[in-house]
Amino acid sequence: MSASITTQSAAPATSTDEALVSAYSRGEERAASELVRRHVAALGQFLYGAGADRDEVEDLVQETLFRAFRRLDSWQGHGSFRSWILTIGSNLLRDQFRRRKGRQIVSLDQREIPDRADPHADFAARDTEERLREGIAALPRLQREVFLLRAQQGTEYEEIAVTLGTTPGAARVHYHHAVKRLKELIR
Amino acid sequence: MSGCQRISDRMPAVALGRAEWTSDEVQHLSGCPSCQDEWDVVQRSSHLGREIGLGLDADSTSETLLEHLDHARVERLRRRTWSFAGLAAAATIAAVVWIQRPSRPVHPAPAVVAGLQITLPELDGLQPAELDSVLQTIDEPAPADSTLDELEGFLDSWEG
Image 1: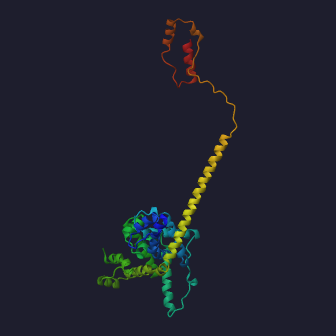
Image 2 (image 1 turned 90 degrees about the vertical axis):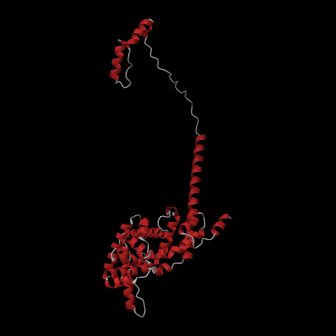
Image 3 (image 1 turned 180 degrees about the vertical axis):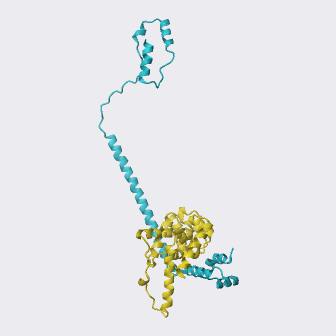
């Protein structure tokens, strides 16, 4: 009876991630739902940007969240919850790449060419996007994670450093190396 | 901090719509090909996969997640229960085997020698004064770590 009451209690949208994690640890399932609602889109975008196939993103998101929630106690409020789950997603993706022994980015020939008013412009944009994605996926792990945390999430170097266990200065260097490589790629 | 560095630091926030370029920054960007290239990379990357992320259904994702977590919890509990049952069964079998073990004839334990007595019949006939003088010649006991030869020599010298 008491369990059903706790699982029904509200998880206010104004609560911090830390408060929601504590609430979930006490048995409030709605706190988990609120955390998922807050971070699922960023996680999906991050995984796709890091090289996941479009049709695998959903499963990877699910698996990442499952792994994260099974060891919530290892997130101790250092760095943001979002950065933490994105890092777990990145590790999961790396494991997947290893199992496949290399990345499988769809080649230009296999891609669908959209039937639109300006197929050439659309194709060029998609081509640039794919080259960028390939470039990001080919970056060394730290460069990739720092770049995506910074470019997609706007995370500050200080927080990136805490999340990835490095220094803000090193994070900045990783970011600039990544940008330099990607600039050459899409020029 | 150089103009390029400052602009580089501001790019993610502007690309994500959290800030806007100032007129000075716009002027710098328009005249700096390196910053333009970087802006292109950051802007494209910030939008990369955004529609895929937004297309994920948070409700069904959390529902599936909670189901998986419940399932994992039940599975863990089941494994623990079986482990406990296994241990209990093993303990019961061990107890039964112990209780039902065949009784063995009990051999009396060898009597513990409280102290070692060395009889030296040669000394039996001595008077107390003579015995004292013999004992005084044994001023040092044989060292504990003596070799067999040393011990034999010691006994020879003592026995005469």
